[in-house]
Length: 74
Image (cartoon, rainbow, N blue to C red; front, side, top):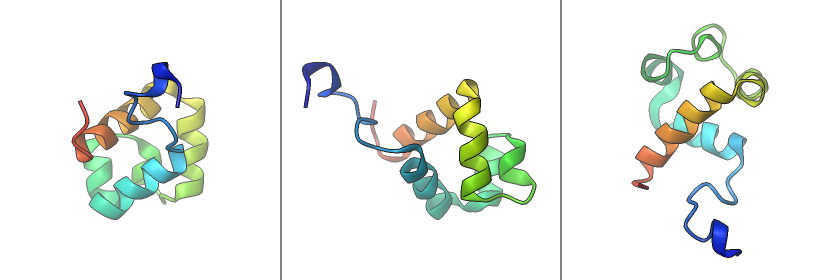
């Protein structure tokens, strides 16, 4: 692992892994109430959410920050 990635808790985690973790932990309904994104509210799926998150940096950031909170990272 490179020095710049040594302290990065997201290193090696795919967006799909992060989203699956959050859905398993919270479920779609609670996830949508925590992060107000339509792809979590209207007919949610991993595939459609990944498509949106990959195109929308601000939404991806919110998902990553929530993930970091759930794993106890700083």
